[in-house]
Amino acid sequence: MNKKIAFILYVIGYILIIVSTLLFVFQKFFGLAESIPYIFCAGVLVAIIGRVFTLPKADDFRKKRLNTMLAIAAVLLLASAYFILKNNHVFIITLIITAFIDFFTAIRYPENK
Image (cartoon, rainbow, N blue to C red; front, side, top):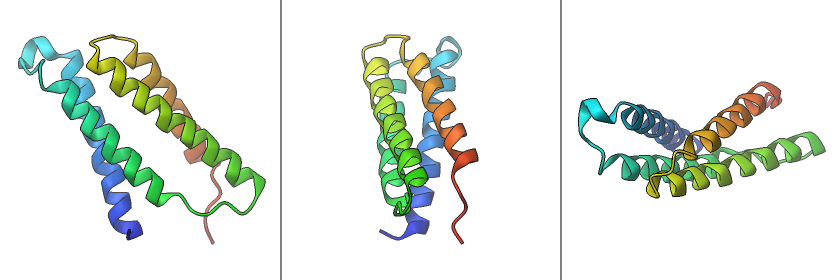
């Protein structure tokens, strides 16, 4: 898959995750309670597919460690999707942990030269 298309999928997935999370929080105002978990799960699926195809090959130990952290974040995203489908508010905790891992790896990942 082309890296540009994979990155666009990654961004679209996270936009769907953010929008569906906000809709879940404010679901009393929008009345979309039945479809919100499915929008979230679609966003998780698209984001994970985009992430798999955008990760560069890991040469050194540092990149391998950061890629492992991103894999853990992907598993936590899947757990968030499961919890939102079960209408359990624990998905917020796993989503926040995923956001911290993504933020940390975005800062620590070395630039490709």
